[in-house]
Image (tube, rainbow, N blue to C red; front, side):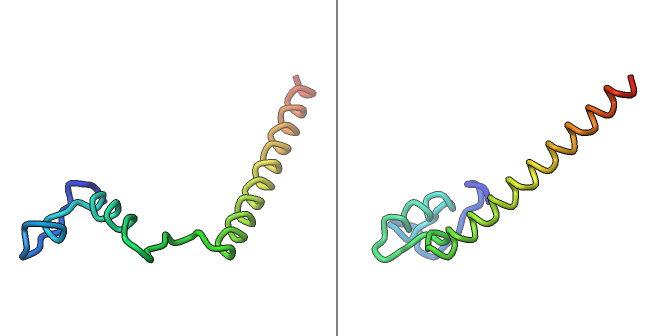
Length: 76
């Protein structure tokens, strides 16, 4: 969503007036008891598992690319 998309309220003055998504986000960060999603220990574990999965995939793809280069060098 871009900053050009604006929420229109009946109230046009003050904090509850017309705001862009960025303004809403910055205001919500400053509010008490407002926590961002994805910061708990469970999410961190899931994130680490996902990163490990991608790392393994990257290593596997690099290994395949290296093997194919070696085969092409042998053929030439």
